[in-house]
Length: 257
Image 1: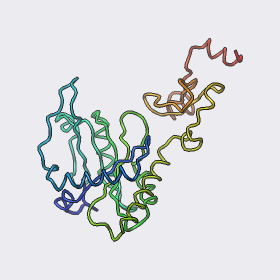
Image 2: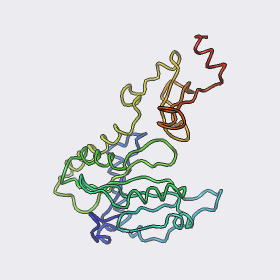
Image 3: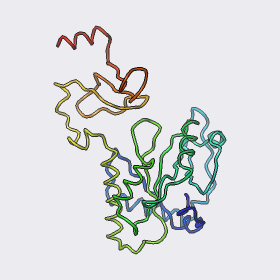
Image 4: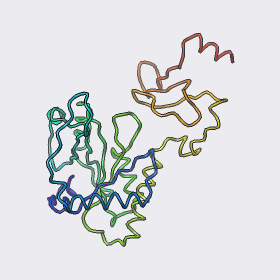
């Protein structure tokens, strides 16, 4: 983890730090969230953070997926070397509060991507300076977004140090504010605006926009898509689309048959 603003507080963070992920595809209730925080803090107090890393699994074998989390504190990194050491995923610091953007975020994110490492972004929280929603939106605007593309991990929030002058109830409310804002922004339009209603699949063909190498999860009610907008630019003008069928099938659709 990177220290706030690049300051040196490594020992303090190892003793007190925890990080909480907010997967957009599932709801994390406060009980499980608090359990996660407690387990993270307990593991640090027991010295788990300093334990030797497990050996990476050989190609094609099952085993723990090894990763790292980095920030500007680590400086320039050679992601090809990191990949060769068995790292399969990385969390990369993007933002802090509502004013700090990690100067190494872009090069780290690109470096991890170019070397086939599944990567995600994390935000260093300052619950005493602004609302959870404000910090979530700042995070989302500077690299913290998520999409179901198979290479992007859901965003994470780094909570550590003191309680920032907040009561337990205020801290819980702040975390909810951050998580709910992040969930709303990273859920699909259909899920956010219709509650993932499944009542249209039998009567209405689906045209889905998902700019990635694979089509991802479809909305409820559809087992396949008719059209897929797979990119926002390319060989042809405007967005790029595929029809799920051949030219004859496209003609039949135009005839209403």
